[in-house]
Image (cartoon, rainbow, N blue to C red):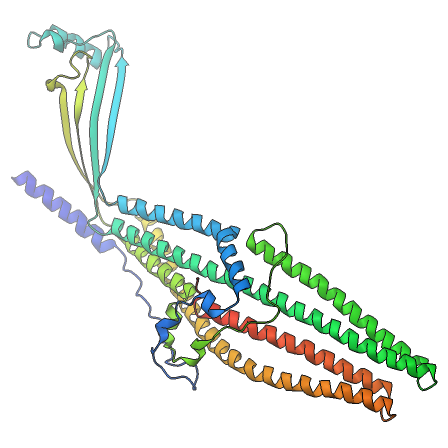
Length: 484
């Protein structure tokens, strides 16, 4: 009884000693509170928010040709397929962490034959045993080659008293969730990149068409000037100026063809295809941005973004890592047992008297390796703080990015309206300049200037259309993206 009390006191002393020397966890920091609104025009409300988050690409972009490309990318893009394999790896890590909490069971089979020297303890002992009158014939030991046969089932289990294993499991689970969000983030970026290149192709197509139409207009003006020169009403200088202008348009159109080819190749890379042509619409099909007309809850929309969610789960994982690292300072209780057959002869191996079993229990506490454990805990604590700063930074970027994009998307609607009116006025100016030239009230330079201005305004309009489309793509990405 006294021995049991002494053992209990020793164990208690070891636990208290290690507990007192375990460092404290770093205090968890709290993220800054998000503003209630993105800007002064918007009110804070969650009304109708769930209808648009997560988004659906087919409802957002509303372009059948683009939709086909997005579906193909999800099925074929190499980076996306690699990420799927990494998700499977993360899931396996989670399963391993879960199984660490359970007892392990293994079957052990061992067979050996040993010839003991005559002047060894085992050799002398076996010789004496065979001479004993207290043993039966089947208990006599073969002294030439002594077999040792062992077949048993072994169970071992580490009691998770301090939460070391459960926190490792939690860390693995949070990282699995983070990997899922990472895959959603990759998917959103992939779909956004494809949509951006797709809209760039449409813009290049439209600009090529503008050059083609302006070349026709320019040629018509050249014909007029050439006719005027033949009757002495225009100079050779005017003809050469128009010819130069025509060649400039042809050169620009050729560069556009090269840009179209390069953009198609870049898009094919994302699709995982060797070559071919990209089927596309002839004009920008504007998506229905109902989300712009809704009242948006800042906190809800920010924390549904995959980059923010990924950073949050990683923060939770590093916090669990720090807890597991601290638990390493406390004693570890290991329990085990085995039961099976053990014999030194084949003839008696399966006898009931060969049954052997053992119960094991061990308590270990770190003493001399505490320096290493302290450093591991220090590293885990610092990683937790780094993860918090990364999480806070991701939230800040997400808020400012979305706030800027909401304003940008609205502003482009006004810019497009003004540019459209500018083109209408310049179209009239080109026709008027031709009429004035024929009636002698304008010179050829005014015709060239009017046509240049109209060409540039039309190209600028397409550029703004592309910027507007890119804004919609970025807004889709900033709202957290989505799939079909």
